[in-house]
Length: 199
Length: 418
Ligand SMILES: Nc1ncnc2c1ncn2[C@@H]1O[C@H](COP(=O)(O)OP(=O)(O)O)[C@@H](O)[C@H]1O
Ligand SMILES: [Mg+2]
Ligand SMILES: [Zn+2]
Figure 1 (cartoon, rainbow over the protein chains, first blue to last red):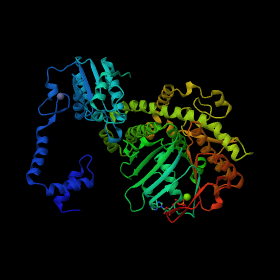
Figure 2: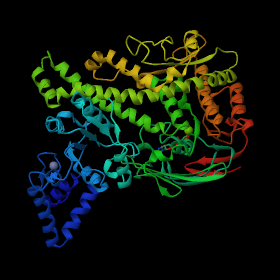
Figure 3: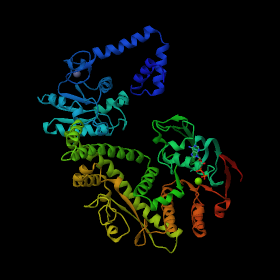
Figure 4: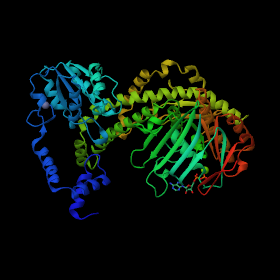
């Protein structure tokens, strides 16, 4: 245990994903020794991201304004929505340049162990977007793992009465992993070869 | 195949040890508690990524150390592969193959195949059904390493589904119970409405992975059955016949833990009933099994929602062992139980061997437990294997049929003496 403020910093850092107690300590001491201007810039960046970045009210993607860049882009196809778990998946898919439709970010996947059910995801918002019948295809691009599959099946069943085309990215994605870890070529191919989800 | 080199760092009692090994028989001899089993346990770990003695990894790391390293050079068809495992209790283990890291330790499964006989095997016959399920599943993974993934997925589905059922069970108990308001609130917080709507999704997942596991087990039991019967007859001639049958929670209408006789469609056994049913391709067809699993889940849904556990699926099935007309468990004598356990391991060995590569045979302290006759028979059966590793407290416990190299193991040092 260190003096109050130092330990506070270590505790706060330790709460970040992927940062264990040892790394937290290392980062803390790095910051203690760093140039005050550098640390100020970091602190500023942290505050700014919280103040300025919010979630798009349409799709849930990170946005600098009310709506994200993609939702504001009039050239994108309104008939297709690609459903992903996280904003980082939007970035991964955008890199492939395979997809010109809109997105919907769920904010996770169904996982009872973590207490996450459909009501904790942005599913109601998705249903609202689908209500007017403009969307004709829903591409479900949740992660290729158990929770992502379960979420895909759940969504497919939910929207089935609406009669739109529901597809899932083709296999070939590394099973059990995160969408973001798939390389651009593989992900692009998975898009092209998407299959109808039959439930 | 055979192991040409074993190197341990901070594994069990060993701070560091390097062993050159050869094909043929090698015996590790020394008084109890000197570290003989620790050596062969390490090889078993390379083959299965788990110990035959303990459930968790923590006891495998030398007291006071933070991680253990096992390196094994495995020779198969004149090609040498170096497998390295770093065991980090509480954190992810890491693996390297020929000095390159692999994404997951699981990726080195299949490089070394072992069949390990140990005093703990008695639990195969006398222990809980989970021991026999593990025997089957370990063997599935040894035959086709991709089953490690199926097994992990199935376990994860069970966990997810279990969490969901517990939420539901909690809510039910809340209703009408004295602490109603509280549980009701907890239920609402956990998203009560979601429970039933998502249960079906997890049913589908359970059925999918469960069917794969179940189908593979059924085929495996079918393949093992004659081999185990034969091995048992060789070890214990003159006593009743050893039979195996798979009893699935799929095949009853009643309570899932009650006796699921061989009459059910997916049971396989030597009884005339199931014999006549046989294992037809239709019975192990994965889609058909998945359908039946889903149907069974619907049947037991009420009970599941009350108890908060998944009641149907391969995790509740049983590999039934029979001796003559009686169950082995609870009826067989100590000696018969031992013979049966050995017969199961021998059957596994024969099965793996039939697929083309001789697995490495490991006999940990087993001869001391056997009478002269069974000792000789076991020795005759295993002698031709490409590599046999034996541990024994005294040289006399190594049967004469199994002469070969010898290491003395004493206080953590391993010395070649012959
Ligand atoms: N994690 C560990 N750290 C240090 N010593 C250990 C560890 N695990 C087991 N041992 C020691 O190893 C010895 C048992 O070795 P083992 O190989 O089972 O003996 P045997 O020669 O009878 O087969 C015991 O003395 C035990 O204390
Ligand atoms: Mg021992
Ligand atoms: Zn948006």
